[in-house]
Length: 237
Image 1 (cartoon, one colour):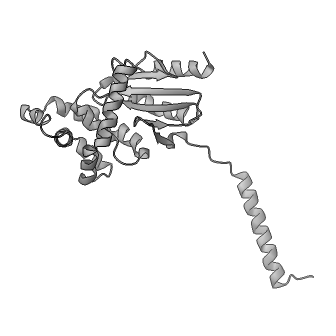
Image 2 (cartoon, helix red, strand yellow; image 1 turned 90 degrees about the vertical axis):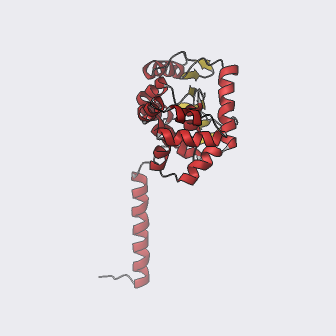
Image 3 (cartoon, one colour; image 1 turned 60 degrees about the horizontal axis):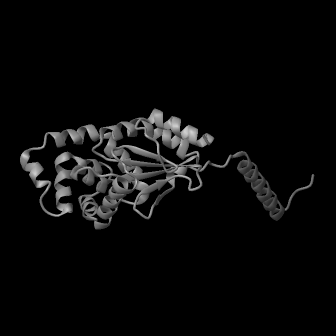
């Protein structure tokens, strides 16, 4: 019986191991690209999510104090991401259209952290809208008066504390200092105001939510109707 020398035995083991790894790699399918994880910031400060080469570009103008926007977020967020964005079919752009100081406060908080954190912040704020918007409705006259005093950052701090928006962001791991920095950001304030101006004056947005599909107003507000429009755009009709 022939015996392998120690060196030859080690070589044989190494070759066998390499072959096994090669077979394992060949048997393991490549992980698909999750396009919703690709987030960029546009020149006007909007967050753009998805495949840059997608056939359909979807733009949403939204307001955090808009109940219809919250309804769309509840019904459409998951299917839009899983069926369209993650598959590379749709590139989605979030644009603020601010209606009031509370909306501005929520918009500033949603932009806390890196661009990749935006979607999670956005979803959390909309998911809790009935709670914090309820506190807005129950705010005292003294509280409401304070929301219009001082710098924008000072006003936003009071609004965030009184409505519970601060608590939402703290649950997401943001410190008081980080939240304050977000509310004080003059860059973010200007970007949000700029998107609002573009929406109202250039794109003629009359209310929220408003969706544009490949540059055209989709004239729908509900997820089911928007899905029909997206499917038609993907088919080329």
